[in-house]
Image 1 (cartoon, protein in one colour):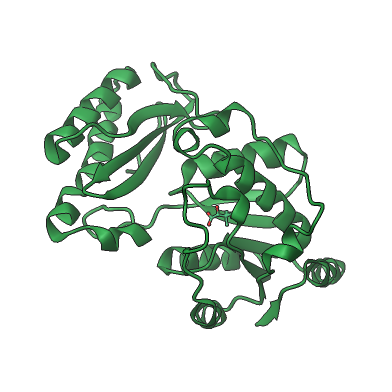
Image 2: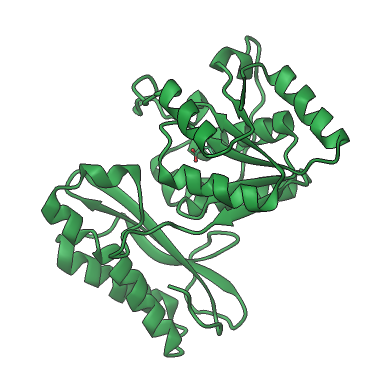
Length: 289
Ligand code: PAF
């Protein structure tokens, strides 16, 4: 595995790989790698001959109250994990190479960036959209793999790359779950054992919604309301949000239309930990929850 820190050098290597007809896949991360990131690498390896991993703690997607400085940066450990996973190139630029003095441009992903996760983190998706486009231009990847766990991020990236005709194929990798259904997350370790038990209600809410849509119900707003009551009955508070959205636009959905894709999205605080989860379904198709 080669470690590259200079954007121009990475771009030159990628151009050369393209000239050799190599198919390039990229997995973008902010480091502090865990099994979720490694599963994205395995996903990319199935589709691409060369896999580039990027590690860049992107300052522009952190709000003023969020702790950019204290974000973990275990670089040696990350590099060892990436190497063991068979990553071909690790691109890890310092911030001043990505945003040199005089840098001004940013990408506004539009209304989708202001709801749900974007509502509590103003500017976050603008920072994500900008760095993702920069990293796609630098790595010249044919394919980029992002986790479905961050479904709104994935939708924003699909929107931006589509709107800007970037041409990279954007792939969502399925959510990895524990045996009891809890979505894997680096935040799960902050849950006390009682809260860890309570946290299974997120997946139970998904299963409830799946069961109801399987019964042929189309009243998504009502189903989401019932699922939110289930969550409330276990954690004793209202979810930050729990609703169905159009899978492409993230506009809240009230009634399902056959053939259309929707996503149940939720953010729930359990103790001092905020967990997110989601489930995609196509109205009229058999569920996979
Ligand atoms: O999901 C992340 O880790 C980040 O938002 C990403 C996509 C690497 C952009 O900084």
